[in-house]
Length: 288
Image 1 (cartoon, rainbow, N blue to C red):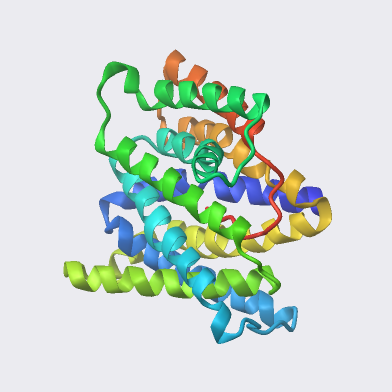
Image 2 (cartoon, rainbow, N blue to C red; image 1 turned 90 degrees about the vertical axis):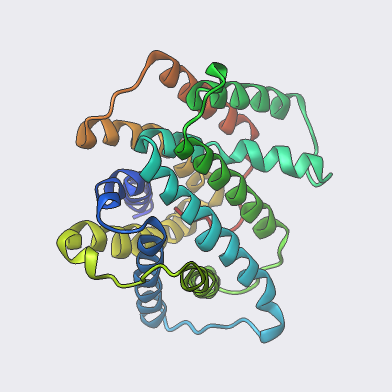
């Protein structure tokens, strides 16, 4: 059960960029993010009902998951969807998957992470890989690449906050609460910008949307948390190290995207760097 949950989680999370890319011609990226996480909340709520769990956080402990929801759903996932719209799906996935490098870099700057030769080597390899993947060496980057970097950095801050927070509640409960605050912030932003939140454009792409909402944003979290329970947080966290490579293969197969030698080399270096700097994750809060 643990291995199956791991494989299902990997395939679901790795397919997010590829499955959402075709929808970018019919709906606003932020509106898609809003509705897919609404679906995610419904699926998680059903999972909680089956497990007979209740939202157990007291009002005084809502601040941290609220901030985490804003960082994750509102900021990071929105930036990632904007990246998917404006650049190749494989590039967006590769850059976003390098967030462990930013986690260690930011934590080290804040004095929250002990530095070591292993992590130093990981940072060097990870940054070198990012330079190749993003095309920084040409001194040119497209808009999508910039959004992907913002998504990776804000997600790194989210992970750091999650690690520093003392969460005694059920992980699914925390995810539901953070999702609620995240989509509330996103809804407010869409209203301020005057962007219609109507899901009508999704009718023509209903199978893809349901896969993203029910599958990636809902079932993916359930299988992820199941894998953590069966295999441990450290082993399960390798999902996020494998995601860029799997997403790249999916993008080539289903979207016909092409990759260069520099991209593949950068992907490999970024993956090795992320592996070297990644510590064992103790929570089941990481999204996709």
